[in-house]
Image (cartoon, rainbow, N blue to C red; front, side, top):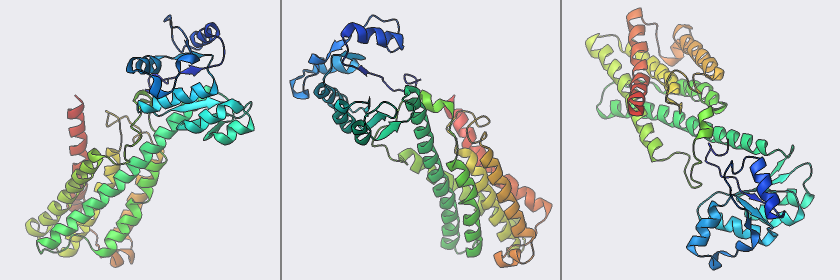
Amino acid sequence: ACHRAGIRVVMVTGDQPITAKNIGQAVGLVGDRDIQALSGKELRPLDDLTSTDRQRLTQASIFARVSPEQKLNLIALHQAQGAIVAMTGDGVNDAPALQKADIGVAMGQRGTQVAQEAADMVLQDDAFSTIVAAVAQGRAIFRNIRQFTLYLLSGNMGEIIAVAIASLVNVPLPLLPLQILYLNAINDVFPALALGVGEGNAAMMEQPPRRGDEAVLTRYHWRAIGLYGLLIAAVVLGLFAIALALWQLPETEAVTMSFLTLAFARLWHVFNMHTSNSPFDNEVINNPYVWGALAICTGLLLAAVYVPGLSDVLGVTIIGWREWAAVLGASLLPVVIVQTGLLLRSK
């Protein structure tokens, strides 16, 4: 699992080389390869190592007869190569290495208090598999934060662009202030929270780790925010123009259509938040909280139109079946365009 996730496991022990090698083979660390355990004496300070030494030491998987100071040298060597280093330990002698590592992991059952205080994490069950599970959970949490932020910013970008363009060309506003507040109360809460509790997918542990300095939103994500915002704004303004100019509907009905189009476009936009190659089988589709959020939001949108008093406050009115068909069709366009583009790109 660690290998598929792009995580290298290195065993560092104070045992004899032959013992270390046998343990490494028994746990599947080196497979069937005949690899010798390197001695801790070779782990000299960085300044004393040649480039050849550094390459050989960073590629090694088993080290034997290693002192606490030599563990520090090994951690510094990997960190100098740009690696994020996690160190496990249970004894007092492991405390300096646990502190120097990017992530110090101490044993909870047989670990000393000194080691636990020096570590960043404590394994309650002392099982290495728990570290793998923690990595998977950490990747899922980071992905959720990224998708949560991407969803909110791109949806709000659509609102901003639609209102800004309407203001610049001096036409009636497609959205009223209270409508925007109502939409934000709906779309910025339920679907976003549903994304925030997603469990991720199995493919996360088959991808290499991200860089330590990688931002939550990269340039790719900022471009995606702009694209999503433009698509959502385009369908809102397009349908608003059709309702006013082509169908010559009253302004209240046209505003209602743009309000509903924006609302449903942002709801369907949640299906753009997956990281899988399949638009039909991914972590968003399989997230029951997403479907619950969509049901709640749909009910609140219908209430905004059909509940007397609320519709008056929001400035919306009941529309006909033709208008509803146009709203649903237009609101689906952004997600269809994005998913089609992703499918073509993946082939």
